Length: 287
Image (cartoon, rainbow, N blue to C red; front, top):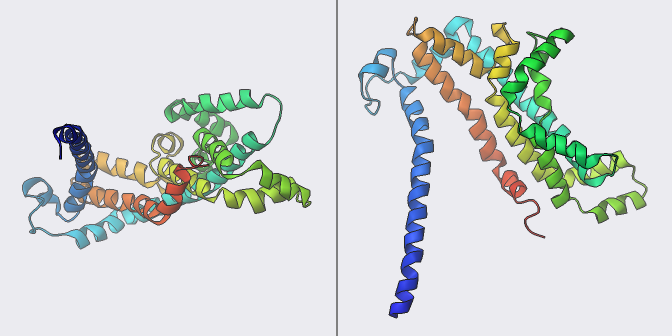
């Protein structure tokens, strides 16, 4: 190898090493809290503050799991079911709504279309916490405060999902295919349901995953809307227990165990649907 080739290769190797170091630090930053959560969930209350988490002594995983579902009459199980209903059903319906709206913005012409889509993009910039009080006042007028619907209905509409839906419609659904379906006599709803929606499958899964993550981690809206503990999602319920732990330390192990179980649905969803999610992220990248 000549000196010139060696000098050209050195910056490439240095750049690759730098990238690897940055990736390794990012992975550690992401996984260390999860590792701590896994280890802490196996410890008793006293061991959490007095022993090394890496030690094999004071193993109490099963006991903590039993205490979690027995605490306060089994409230955690109710909270978990509530979160699944809010997140899974809400994300599924919300993804269908978002993709349908995005499809309409991309494939149809109507008055002030781009201006309305500009409002959608502007809504993406608005933090959800800013909307909590107006949503509360609207729910109060409708008599929905402290009900399931007060949390479920607002999560069905996501401006970012509409934006993604339009991008996916443009990348996955050729206009020629829709024209061919119309020539064959298919109506607009039939064309969308039987032709376009099937082609939008990867995009639908991608929007679903984004919606699922946002709704599962939603905290401020349930806190504003709900006062009945039986309607709490996991995030709000664990926050309440964590606040009580300063007075009643027996809540510490169950909060940690509950937090560990709370991340499992998101991990499972991304693992099972990652093939569709990856292909969805590349929509329109290759023609």
